[in-house]
Image (tube, rainbow, N blue to C red):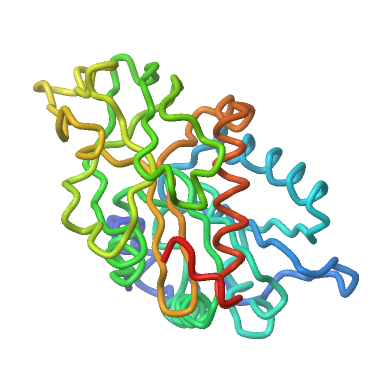
Length: 281
């Protein structure tokens, strides 16, 4: 049994008789044979913190995006969709604030194989928190830096977001900087970004990167240079591509035209994996 499930069952005698496999989705969702192709899969299962507002805001943006782009659109919280037969129907996947131990080992393996074979993944906000340690490949290789906290008093603050890679395709049309309000994640450093391209960083001089709400003051500063506090990055993994963005707790950010442009670029760039277009890798 994985760590989250162990915590869930702690103190519950009934869990002793529940096999680990029953904690995971086993029956895949019904997907219409008429789903337009190519198609996007949006996965938003949470077995940790659930970012209701962020999930809703991202889903609305993605519904608009797929309509305009002529893509099929399928959203689910059923992890049994991560089987070879179902994954073959999608060329782009969004992890919409996924948290906790949501996939079985077999489902994790299927998704890993799909990405390395040329799949495209865009992961949002909570999908990069510290609740994914049960899946080391995703936690260490896909995400990399470990989430250590966010300010809590106040939780949402306006900050200056800085373009760290103006020549990368994902950053096409993105200004040098702009102001945005969100719940700002801090991570344990940048060493785990080796091989990745940092895309966006935070100017810590424009907000208070401290947690003043719970117990002793928690200093979440990563550095005065925005490059020392990345909040979005891109990776080429095997034949696949991944973009992670820590922006996305506040649903209003999915209405921000600059962030919408960033997400549209991220989707387009990751979808170009395996096409021979090597820009950004």
